[in-house]
Image 1 (cartoon, rainbow, N blue to C red):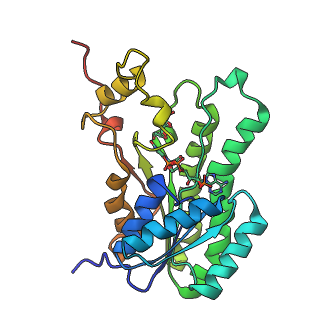
Image 2 (cartoon, rainbow, N blue to C red; image 1 turned 60 degrees about the vertical axis):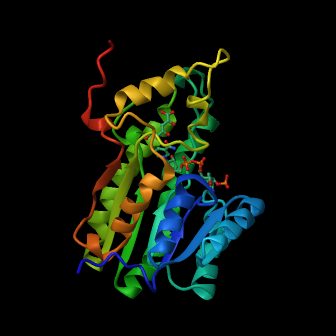
Length: 264
Ligand code: NAP
Ligand code: GCO
């Protein structure tokens, strides 16, 4: 029987106090993993711990900024002492800034690239030695449609998520011999706080133009939900995907396959 069970595994999901990360952490917990997550904010950690407890999921939360290597190293050491060596890492923490490139401050560009690309390097580097010692590991990087496509105002985000696709492939290449698989998940347009500005109703109550645009570009004719990511993350975290390596699994309702609905 195909093994999707994560019983006995320690799964770290970064930035999982809410949104896509929380939903993926919930799925990993439901599949049997001990869930570990971080946020920059103690209040967010506490709220998420209460939510996991309510769902009967064993979770451990830490305050940690993934851009700070010292904080990340300290968090991984605490996880190894209190929970166990990390078997599964989901690099989910991420930000976006929607600003025309010629108006974007250098510091803003760098913050997005640091958070969405450099931080996955920092956290992956911190957990790989333990995975090598254990003889197995799963690293799952949360990419994006913008790992493949560009659009106005998201230059830093697209550059970072494009780079994250190639970091995924390089980790897969460099550590496959240690039985570590590194893959990506590329969510389409998902209804979370990150995309809330793109779905806000107009002053006259009509749909946001971008909202209608995305629905017309998606064969599934809807926005995705964080729950749509639960099955894909369990698959890539489990032994069922042990020969899948360096792959970006797009969970996008078909956007990347579709030219878009013809205007009536
Ligand atoms: P979200 O609701 O804004 O969640 C992002 C999470 O990242 C927050 O929990 C935040 O935690 C955490 N975070 C940000 N910077 C951090 C840092 N420096 N250190 C630690 N945690 C940090 O967004 P989401 O939509 O769930 O996105 C989650 C991931 O999916 C991101 O990588 C995003 O790029 C990607 N994605 C989203 C979509 C979409 O349509 N929503 C599509 C494709 C990819 P705190 O604020 O609590 O610290
Ligand atoms: C945007 C959106 C997208 C989504 C996601 C798509 O402004 O275009 O925020 O970037 O968040 O990354 O896969």
